[in-house]
Image (cartoon, rainbow, N blue to C red; front, top):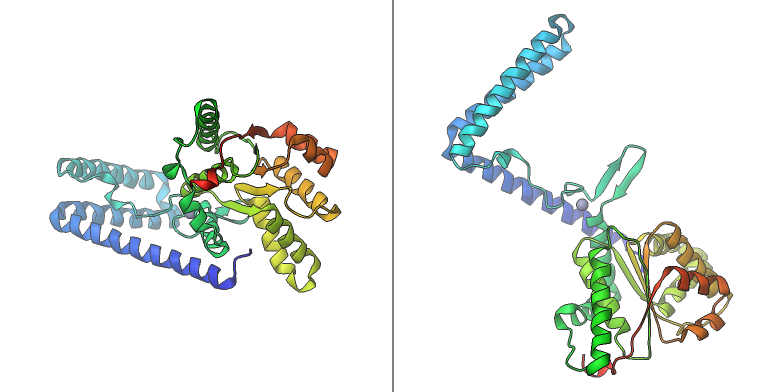
Length: 323
Ligand SMILES: [Zn+2]
């Protein structure tokens, strides 16, 4: 479940390639513009000279603030003239801006923080999720399960309306994901579309730079147990926990199919509670009726689920027969 060092190296190499390619595109664009409009290069060279002059003035304290102000005015006047000429020539004034694929981290993968260590950028987390999805074999599942392949002609009457309402709800969840904190619990018997809708949401959010962890309940608790009880797997345990607790969306599929014991109960409550406290969404799907959920897990889990999750009961025909 944790990213291997080789995968981290691969991501860093990808960032390096992106930066190199963007630098090349930037230089190419600038050279093209300067060749076609040498007067713009002259302006930019003069502005660069003045910026240098300003830096020297700032170093020498005897020239006073007036000298710096005068240079600032000269620079502003040159900017103005240059932008007017650029506009007349049909060149956007942003031609001098460097090119970045990710506007948030400028293709470094990390966001510097004033009050602590740098944080992974959302694009880094997205890439992490993609690699993990690929390694987990779920990429193929997401390709087959997304809104673009959704069929509603298999439903009749009320069932169809009910399913379409659920789809609308999921789309609302996706659209307001960055502004509203919400959780979903899909209930229903086998093949009614719980995993399908979870996959649709995962697909859409992955495509918009969100990190998603999608695990069956069995795999989730097996991984946590393996990490917890194997002394040689401490670093891996930390990495797994970090992703489960810190991903933007955690999807626990088929809750109720795992073996129930006190370890599972404690871990489930901790995950649900920690993510609730940090306002990070969870989607759970289960075949269990609500009353069975209460019997199987503790009251505190049950009340957390019913209190802070939107419960969607699905009742369609067996979707797996047609998808
Ligand atoms: Zn980024």
